[in-house]
Length: 422
Ligand SMILES: NC(=O)N[C@@H](CC(=O)O)C(=O)O
Ligand SMILES: [Zn+2]
Ligand SMILES: [Zn+2]
Image (cartoon, rainbow, N blue to C red; front, side, top):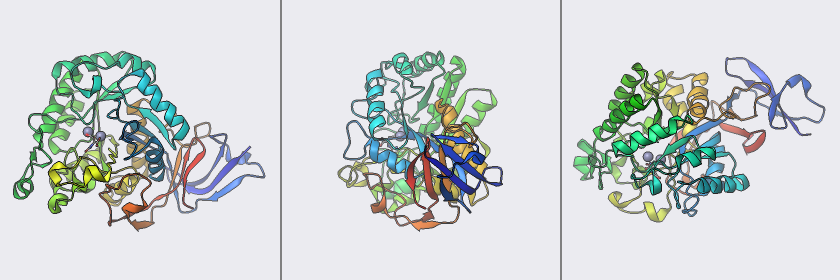
């Protein structure tokens, strides 16, 4: 029997303590045997394994950009023990068979729990509902056409109605396809005008969120907003919550840190959907994550092969990496600023994401009897990010060359070491 004893880690709540792991679960530290493996975690903080509500693993279909294996290795490097894998793969995850296939590949290759997200509509085409019920029977709780907006109001109504029976949630990529259509690739404002890039106005997001929360109220269903990026969307979400509407929201690390000015060099690394926004939106996002209007961080890790990114800005693919640097960005934008303490980080990056996604064995406290999903965090160590050092197969890393925290020292997924740097 292999046992692992982690000594001296700072636990949420303040005190240092020991954690003993046997057969993938936390057990009473006093019961440690004589051949136990010890890890000295003095000075480190023990958090529950992080859970990502939103990432793109590109398998099946674009294994040149990422695979379930490489993407979850990056996830483990970032302290994650579970990820929700978006449905915009090829073939699209719009059937129970596609869900089962993704799970089967993950069972062989993954370094974190992979929960397939089911498409809302067949082929992400926005017209006909996908096999929501059959996918739910295969374990799916979170459904999204991410990459595309479910823009047809009636389709959205039907999807919300459908998933209510099994406590599913519809996660929306909120982008009005007419207000922010083909060619929209930069926040509409002074910078897009000066650079001559197609404008993506903030309102194209919030009008969809406003419509959807009203549909969620009418249907009584759960609705989740992907990658919230504007102050106006936050206002709508606050209004909806005050009315008791069942809405949750996520923010990406890049929208917490980066602003529109990052695109001034026309570097397509910074082309992302929704686009990077000006300071006032970034400030609103940080405030909303602090006060819980936005309850979680979702990375929207979106790897792209060089031949899809190395183009003129307007022709390049949308998306940037996020899994490895997410915690680091939250530390610099939220913890260092005094907006979140470590209990708040656990809530926003583990507990809330697991609740939203309906996961029962993740986002749990580090207590005896619970599965040993854990990340040991070094609050002091920093590094200069080097995109070549990424465990992702892609190199579209928006933090390349930036000084950021380098916190993750150990990740355990159900007791298994998935990343270790101590
Ligand atoms: N965020 C992005 O810019 N791109 C995502 C799709 C998405 O999340 O909308 C992708 O799949 O590449
Ligand atoms: Zn999206
Ligand atoms: Zn996405």
